[in-house]
Image (cartoon, rainbow, N blue to C red; front, side):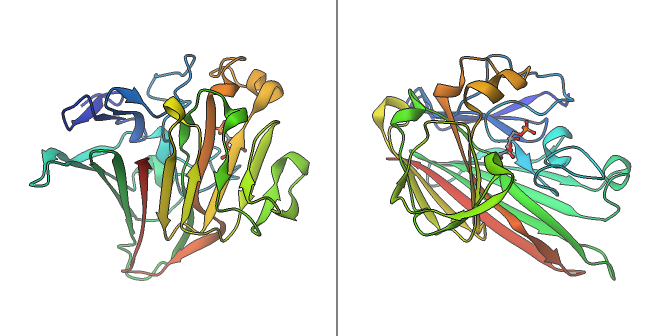
Length: 277
Ligand code: TA6
């Protein structure tokens, strides 16, 4: 299957989820015909560049990387469709994607690994179940992982994000200085790029598509990254429209402020549930 092929999970009722095999990037999630994810009109679909929008999969590195591309290689390699979309007894639809080490990945990160990504489309929910396995007999490896979710919003200035009060955050807009969040709800009115550490399992974003709320539940993802490039940094990105920043907010569940250490023969599991409320 070509690297830029897409796989569609269709639950009926105009509720679908579309995944591009390039990076296993979820590029659309429609609930009753309402798109929940932002994808830039200028996103590039060449099977090489990371897709600007949807849910890029960040692994094994978050941020800049000495040995490879920013945010790692998982979002720029072709994934296998391990299990074609299947309707479950519940009426939900499930599919499984996977990658394992190749000459390309080992040229940057010389470890054997196997990563599986199970997606389940429910009526108003999208479930993500992830497992990383270290098949080595003797080599331990460490990694970061993050779901770089771009939520579509009518106006980011009207969004409020809960569940960050009291959390420490690294502010990448202020040279990585560390602060503590005082607000009970976080709002965005400027360039925002923050790594919140040890955050609760749940966040709610208000005023997403058609004024609804989006609930994020995460397990084994201790961190939450909040990002909006605003005016200035929107211009820095060739695959992002200068005027698109008001219509997206990234709220990203991840394991980034400390690495996961994976011993030989062991596995790491993490999951996320997105729910339209
Ligand atoms: O997750 C937020 C962030 O790390 C920002 O620093 C910003 O760089 C964004 O990701 C987009 O990164 P990208 O490599 O996709 O341009």
